[in-house]
Amino acid sequence: MIKRIKNVNLFLYYALAVFVYTYSGVVGKYPDYNANALLTYFFVSACAAVFAFAVSVFFTSDFENGNKIKKIFPVLLFAFCALYTASDVCFFAYSIRLFDDYYSQTWCMAFSAGAALLCGAHLARRGKNAVTSFCILSSALFAAWTFFGLFAFFTAENALSVSSPLSLLEKTRFSGIIKDILYLNADLAVLAFVLSKNESKERRQTLKKAIPAGVFAFIAVSGINVLKNLLLFGDKLSDDAQNPNFTAIRMIPLFDLPEICVIVSAFACIIKICVSACAALFAIKEIKKEKYNDKKTTAVFVSLSALLLLFSQSAIFGYAQIISAVVCAALCFAIKRENG
Image (tube, rainbow, N blue to C red):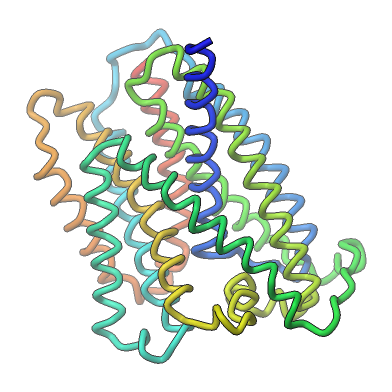
């Protein structure tokens, strides 16, 4: 009986961590509606469900080729995790300008970016338990943010009608849907890599069930958010808004504070950073073994991420988050396959 309760608690722990991590992508950088919110949601959700099952099976399995890892894979993972971190920090720093003119000052953006980067790196250095615990802690904040966002209906005079996805088919930006699928789904492999690392077979079997459960919870809550935004703003305004979720919560008089949006965005950014940083540190530890030094490795990761931030003004950097997420996912698959 006690063992069963422990397994249930572990399942809920993993599932909640997976949900918070995937949902942080919606909170921090909501994907475009691509002129067809329902169709975008359908494709993203379908791909998320399929990918979640694939990831859960792969990263909880054992492979025969143990201890034959190629050193180039961990090094590349370290570099692309730093690029992913830099792009996420960059977006967070620039996005807070939308909340208030005060946050558009250069020193404020630089301080916010530095604080998020250091917090995420510190959690990663503390280990996997610190990373997952921060995700669990953030769940209360995200739950409150989502729940109170529904109160925007009290300030709206009438709910708008929701258009059929087929009626908006000609305006749909399918290239944007592909980008959203990659943005929201690819880095799930990085989280699975971190959660399954050095775990017992019993725990990995629990994780195998928890990953799809967490992703399905993400799909359900995201669907509520999409429907809420369409009823509040309609198809066009929902598509044009930078982040309709933040717009909805600021429609509530008591929540019309830019600080709320900044705090929620900061938590979402730190969650992404700490997971990618943890994966990078795990990768280097694989090849350094007893020579591994967590302080030096973390310092190198922070320095490399900060250096990459200097290129944030270049046009190609806008795609850095998607490209790095896909490459990191591929490298996590490769490392898991090689390392058994």
